[in-house]
Amino acid sequence: MATSTPAAPTGGQPHPASAGPPTKGGAGGEAPRQTRRNLLHRLDLKAVPYGFIAPFFLIFGAFGLYPLLYTFWISLHRVELSSMDTMEWRGLANFTELLEDDRFWNALTNTFTIGVISTVPQLLMALGLAHLLNYHLRGSAFFRVAVLTPYATSIGAAALVFTMLFERDFGMINWGLGLLGIDNVDWEAQKWPAQLAISTIVIWRWTGYNALLYLASMQAIPKDLYEAAAIDGASRWQQFRTVTIPGISATIIFTIVLSTIGATQLFGEPLIFGQGPNGISGGADNQYQTLGLLLYEEGWKNYQMGRASAIAWAMFLILILVFVLQRVIARVTSRKS
Image (cartoon, rainbow, N blue to C red; front, side, top):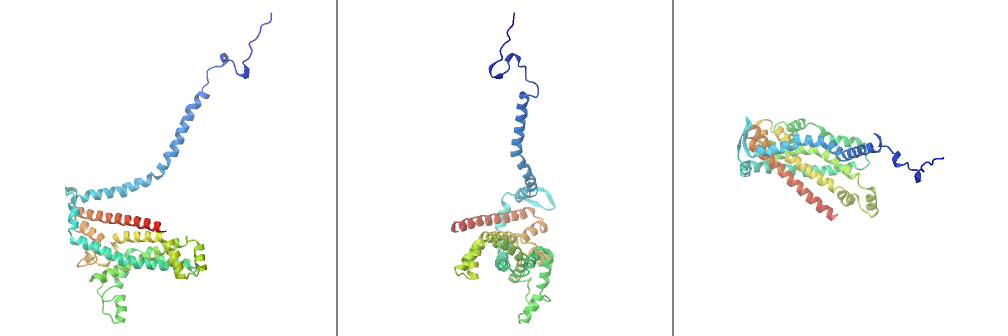
């Protein structure tokens, strides 16, 4: 008698009874591994970029943000340099006394005047140099390096050389003025001559640096604009005024802000120009004392770190104000263009 075998299910699928439990490493083990891979992929996309920029924030927090906040904390106390661990709470008294101190307003005025005297000629000369270097001149690479040389020179060496040039009795500047029949000028003892001499040092050091910034911006202006202006009959001066200046307006604003920051922090030039104790006080009558010198005098000569910290924060707030003005000017300029 013949026995019949059970027919296989349609579609070639195995009979349920013959299917055993899933083996280890099969479909049941793939799901957890795929989940882990997806998790690692998401962490790679989201966490790794933060890991790359973490060193910057760590260094900035340790050497930038923490000193800034700690300086503000010190400015709210009476602290002497000889006993930094002893603090007497004063609140905003250091700031109010600073506003009532004639020396602070004198230093602020000197900082402003020296900044204007040094910044305006410096940027105008830098603009002219950049315009000349923008043309195809013989040895243009040499001149571009040469204008940057003063910036690479040590501030101490530059200030000492200019101090000798402006020396009252044997300086070359007074020797040249003597040839014109002008009596010797006591550059260090008088207010405006001293500020003019200090501004000369700043102009000499920073003109070439700003010229290269302007030159880089000028070379980014499309040549088609100059060709179109020339076709319209514009002269070189008209091209400079209507094409070059608008094309580098953002760079001009940037250099103004940069020069303002440098003028606010002016320290080395007047300190070395004073040649001794008068350098810290900005002359016998504080005629060229800047905010940087006043901060140094309060902190390291008078040992009043609380007042010095208040001056530092006043300088910081001035820079914040300059930054806000720069943003407003940039926005107004962009709307007009």
